[in-house]
Length: 227
Length: 110
Image 1 (tube, rainbow over the protein chains, first blue to last red):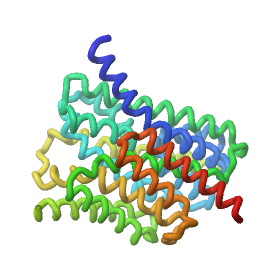
Image 2: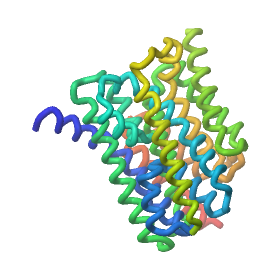
Image 3: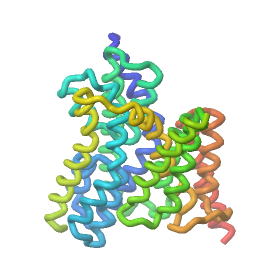
Image 4: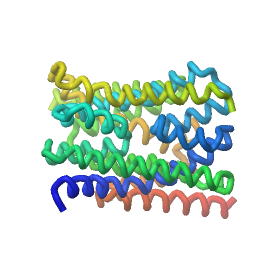
């Protein structure tokens, strides 16, 4: 096995545990999209066109309530604004890549692929085959998302609505969050962001998330100065 | 189904892709100020926490600190497992197990 294959496979392997949380989420999405009146084709295509779990759920909810198109698009943009932060955070590591690599990697830049890739980059820096690791993690997630969506569409209402499977995603995020808590500024950033998100949960269009991210980052920087 | 849904999906998808590509594309074309570079270190902690805490503390849209908030119990169990083991798979499975058990026991007691 050469270094490219090894790097790709370790990306896939790093992503595997996260997929345990992603799979049930994709199934719920598929079932929910049908119940909101989307055709199976639209529900499946959304998983590759939008390819962003949280915003797909909100999309189906808003489509059910017949919310105006402009509002749905605005809400999607706000929810996915965090991907711009991911993009900025990972950009220094992908800087040397040609555009034909930047385009697919950007498309694959979801929460979970970002988490796996940024941990690897921070640990090992940029190696000649690092982008294969990122690609492996991203593709593993993409395939899982498509397959779980399809299964959710197929099972549809056979999926029991009272199973708390949706909590698998916050649990995945807990697993990614806790190991990051290495120093006081990080803890301050997490606490400040979390509290702000709780207080701002009532804001429309999920604006609380972006506000919380801003407050958390500021808290981290302030704590850095103090220590 | 409303045909406009396809349009919304495509515009939303294009916007999402543009945001994901933004800095990956632009980096190297200009320098980030040092403050921005330092600020970006806090992105994962801040964003993940801002998603996790409401999911644990506001399951029905209002703050619920009671024992009947199974998501809070399950989330706390997951935090402990994540902290002790640093194992993603164990964390998710432990949290899910606690949540399903709590829902099941709660249902029996009702």
